[in-house]
Length: 234
Image 1 (cartoon, rainbow, N blue to C red):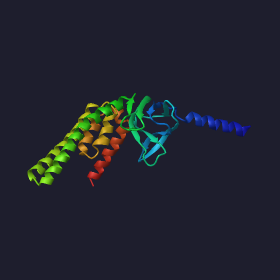
Image 2 (cartoon, rainbow, N blue to C red; image 1 turned 120 degrees about the vertical axis):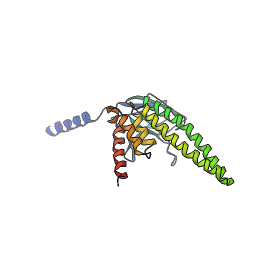
Image 3 (spheres, rainbow, N blue to C red; image 1 turned 120 degrees about the horizontal axis):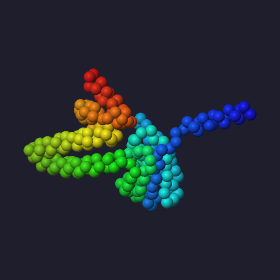
Image 4 (cartoon, one colour; image 1 turned 180 degrees about the vertical axis):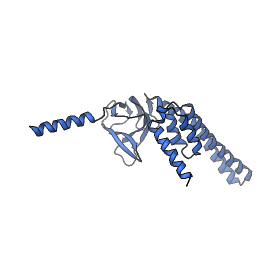
């Protein structure tokens, strides 16, 4: 009896210590008949499964997790069809997030709702894509200049590329500063301009309010800046 009572107490303690899910990810995948969906979190350099569900043509899927703070998570589809494992990255926040997509274009057709931070990230990526289109034009111009051997055009193409790179950095810095009250700011600094002059990272970090500086990516940005400064001083 004593052993049974002790076992019951241990089970009760374990169940009480397990965090309750505060994030629900749900949605539809048009065209998918069978596969496994994973909700994953990046820990160090590894993707760790937070939840999974076997998909057998149901109308919707549902995944849950306990989210300590807003962060990037990943919806991964394993179709049991070779090495092609498509993955959707999204900025998760506590609550319900809906991700609707298709099997054919799993990543590209994804429509994500329920996360204000995801909306901010999509705004950033939309404007960034315009700069990337300009970069493709510059790559073509540089190739044509090198092919023709026109030194003046080559120099101009190189200068235009340098100027565009500066515009990309400036856009990322301004976006982070304009959204300093959001967790998107330190994330952009870490993901987009980590190799910029450390003074720009410092500027972004020092502008963050306390609650954002103490968020997951705020703390990671602080740690990264300190590491960069140590490396620069060697």
